[in-house]
Image (cartoon, rainbow, N blue to C red; front, side):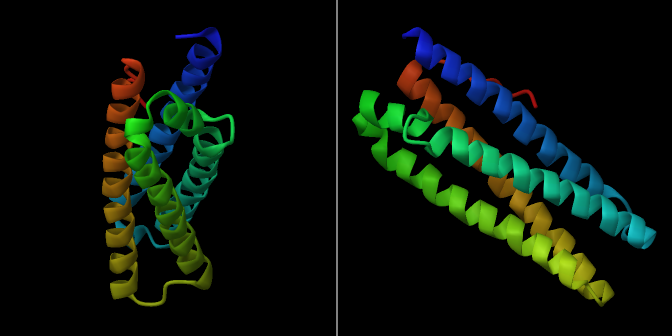
Length: 151
């Protein structure tokens, strides 16, 4: 593997850790009691905002014309379908993050709506975890490199 790819994979690994930290922060925020009211809402909002930022950074790093996915397609065309799935999921995941942020901004009026918001954010975290697992498998299959599970 050439030095440029190694350097890029290190950037991917570091950004992956940041995304993992943002996911953990959202999980922590969601695990607080809803009864905290404005405190709960503020923590969830802050965590979703950071997650949106890190997801956009992740998409930029992996989907750029000189990014990870372009290299994967060139080096391992057999994995193009899996790469396409990852790209599609990026758009879907970011759309859900943005939807949750908009919901927060519009204000959640009822207790039931707050519970539904927390459930949707929890489901999102599961989807993100599975997305990261598939990405890790994809990189390992193409480069025989472990991105690591920390973060």
